Length: 230
Image 1 (cartoon, rainbow, N blue to C red):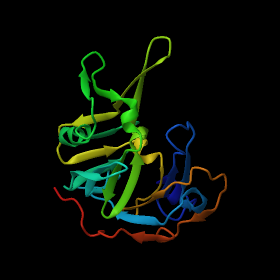
Image 2: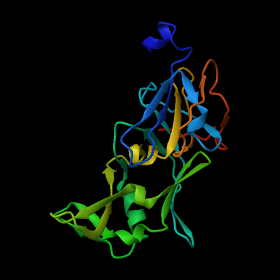
Image 3: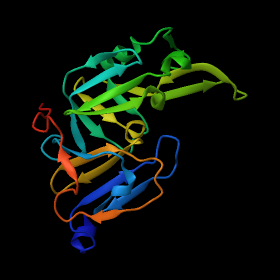
Image 4: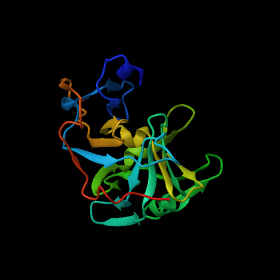
């Protein structure tokens, strides 16, 4: 990064705060971390290589679960190459993962005119997805991933779809803004690590600390050494 070579920051790092799925403003801090923007402990994850280098910000997804108010169902327990992509508004996953999620919903049907599997929006109530990142479990409401369909005059049709795209690669997941919006993410490109915590979406404060060595206050994920391999 040019900012490091010019002495403006000590390490090639940046922190991202997207401020929730319904907000159109985001904050990015180069060379530091804003402790006021997250609510839990920062958990450290190793980046994994894309080919021969670290050209993508990618980590290991070690599992995915569908959770209701009564039980939880494993969608997959396989390791996946998971790209953290703020340039994508939606999340992409293998078709078998999407089918596993849809199987937990009732009244699902495919709409050829819309190009989505649709279901009553009420199906998302009290349901969520838990993304397991090497023992760091991130629970996100299913409603954060929905597309709401309406009539031409803006009236709700009461039908929704999951805003997930499917991928031909059975080992790859792209976690877009709908996933990242509720998180605070710190990327260290010098050490090839990422730190993640739930974002504090109510915070209007600022408490920025420069990153001069390791990411401050971050501790390794429980399964830090269990990374995805090709």
